[in-house]
Image (cartoon, rainbow, N blue to C red; front, side, top):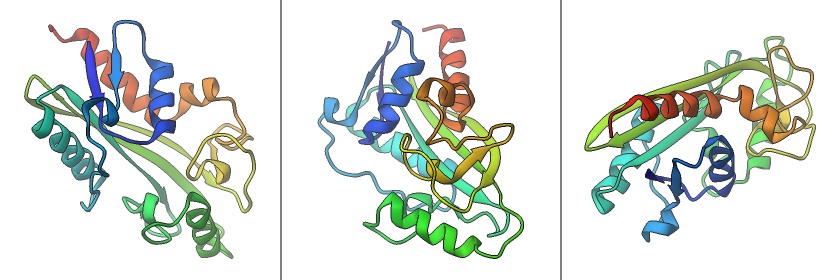
Length: 193
């Protein structure tokens, strides 16, 4: 089965591809001639994921899935949340976002946080949502060189290493995106196609 993954993010495509078996072929946006960035202007992860999936589906007519992910911190009332990718401002880097987060958490005792991913699927013109969540905490300094985004400062509950320090295969067993993706794949395998 071919599915379009509505992203230009090569890190996400790599992570998702590691989870798939030979029955699925993932096409990126470049494969379907969509080169523009799809806006993420909604107030929730669910709305952003649905908007991106609809955007691609409306232009291609193909089955598509899109995700949106946010890091939610308890001490900052859920921030950066839906604004995680642009927390330090439009056009800023992951490193800028981490710097802002660590600055805002200075002096806070509660470092509890969670990564949450919502995947929106449009399959045969019907819409579905799948969610994955991993609890953990934000450490005070960056560690590791793997992963992307906030991975260098996020330690999942039950682990001593950041998401940037653990191997991708291990991260794919416990990550928010992997959890949501497993729910999506389970649904696809059970669906009569």
